[in-house]
Image (tube, rainbow, N blue to C red):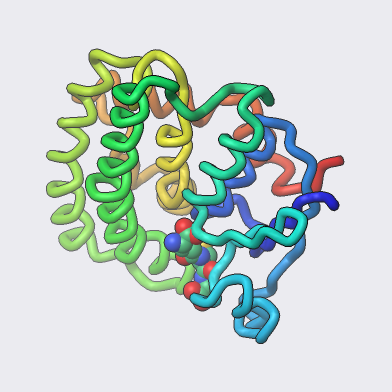
Length: 222
Ligand SMILES: N[C@@H](CCC(=O)N[C@@H](CS)C(=O)NCC(=O)O)C(=O)O
């Protein structure tokens, strides 16, 4: 039975990078929309597969998994030969460098992007004004993390080395929405003071599968 992906239908948050992995690896799947506005994420059926009432979640022939990063790891391990490998290995050192980068993404990028989204993207979506002082304060903290990214990316093409991996994709969760919904006014990824961060970000967001997702949205694939 074809893999089912439960989503809100938008290339946003973890759903966006799960859709990217499916596209890059050309894994067949059926998208099943969960309308959050109509509280379909709180139905007993959905809570059975995702107890936190969130998307994405997947059902692969009865194997149910949630948490976007875990879903990506499952897909990359199950389909190593499809498209880019996305999971470094097999050596212990390669795998641990991946774990290190995965922790960095969550602690030093995602958490700041969430704070930034709260002061920007969420306000734009609610039609509220953006508090520039609050945004600048977050950008200050975030900037020092991105300075460390600049060091990493001046040595490596990607976060775990010379090959793109899931960790690079995990960065495409909230940030693209912040950048596009503020019409590029809030974009810490394009600073001339961090040329390698800017180069890496342009490379990631120019991947044909990502560009197609932005243009066409998430579509089931056979
Ligand atoms: N840690 C979860 C977060 C998922 C998440 O925040 N999903 C949002 C949409 S982007 C959601 O379902 N929100 C509905 C809600 O929380 O009521 C993951 O990475 O899968």
